[in-house]
Amino acid sequence: MTARSHVGKPLGGTEVLLEQWAIWRRVGTGSPRSLTTGPSANQPSFFITDDVALVVDGAVARLTARERQLGEMVLSYYGDGHAAKRIGDLHGMSEAKARELIRAGVGWIDCVLDHQSNPVDIREDEP
Image 1 (cartoon, rainbow, N blue to C red):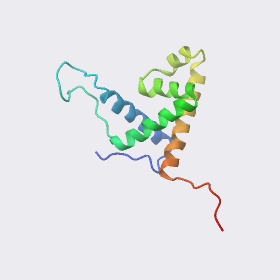
Image 2: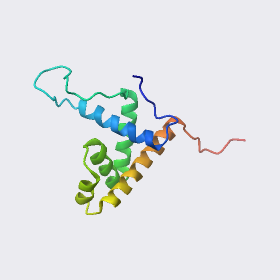
Image 3: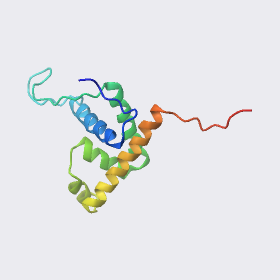
Image 4: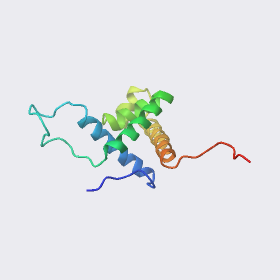
């Protein structure tokens, strides 16, 4: 299977990238799923490349640094696999509000990824 790229993908593609990033993150933590060393048969497979995963990881880190609550919600939902209901309960809000904020975080990450693939020069043109 070929690796997916976030370039030119709709917002749904960013959610897929976050799901793949979460698997990449869990597999790379060094916490084995069994007592044997080496690749385990019960480890989940992922198709995100290390380069793309590191870009997504950086975007999540930037979101968490800028908007801590949104970053924590995205980390809880995608990174830890918690349900929106549980995240809402932890933050003292409804499940619907938690889903709304998670989507806002995904949208923010989508913009960061899009900007990194298509940087915009905001400097004034020199005469």
